[in-house]
Amino acid sequence: MINNPNVSKILALYEYLEKVPYDVTRTELYSAADIYEGYDPEKPETFENCYDTRVYRHFMSMGKLTTDLKESVARMLHDHKMYLSIVNYFREHNYMQFVGVMGGHALLRTDTMYREVVYLCKKMTEIGFNMLSGGGPGAMEATHLGALMAGRQEKDVEDALKMLSVAPSFRDTTWLSSAFEVLRKYPQPKYESLGIPTWLYGHEPPTPFATHIAKFFLNSIRESTILTIPFGGVIFTPGSAGTMQEIFQDAVHNHYLSYGYSSPMIFLGTKFWTKDVPLYPLLEKLMDSGQYKNLNLALTDDYDEVMQILLDFQEELKANTDKITISIPSKE
Image 1 (spheres, helix red, strand yellow):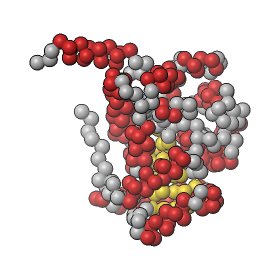
Image 2 (cartoon, helix red, strand yellow):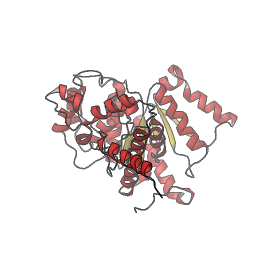
Image 3 (spheres, helix red, strand yellow):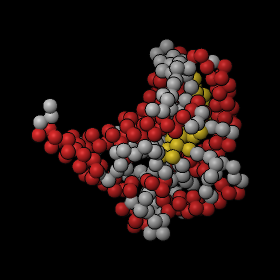
């Protein structure tokens, strides 16, 4: 039997869940309009009171590692719903064609690599791949801009890049408003992409170019999700600490054949991955020594080669469906 003190605690929890600035019962992925609800690109100051900022402000006030039980429950419920929303999203798509792009948030919109990632992801989206990333700025934003521009002409891509060049860094005051300007001019009714950001890095605004956004409080869940669901392979562009973490996390999945097979790990940028940050030779050495097994590694500067590797892998998957141990649970 529930005594009165426990009833009071339960009621207090319900009241708290209703007051937090985020919906713990949400059953759908966010859109850019949801994340930036309350933001007016014509009035940059409105960013301070949009949905994403309000949630981040609350998150920081309660502590990144909160000791408040009610807040902990609220965050877990929200993140659980986000994960279920991704599962539901996968039911509507060929999840074996999801490809992740990992890379640095500091990559400028005016950088050559940014442009190249945009064109690569545009072409990959057009031939049937579903692009996903960590949903932030830099290489992540370039991923979703590429998907956004799928089906359009090169002159349109160049125009969008020119529009964005007024704010190369996410720290620039017009970074977000210039993105919304591109969205207004180039809406995307056909192709989709999935961004997976986190409030832990709330100083990095999520890119509005992703048509679907799964934003998490717990970065551990977010990182695990990012490296689990790109069943079609992962492209690693130059990055720093977060990208390094993701490389080894992905390598673990492939080493143990967590889903019955090993998906491609494609390193884009030969000089960076062999000289500046020589992780590729390290992984090769670990493979030769037997400390890592089953890694499907590739190193290239050729974007056509990237696409061919991923297309060849799709054919390999079709020929070896009996080895795949992935199953998307049916909707309850």
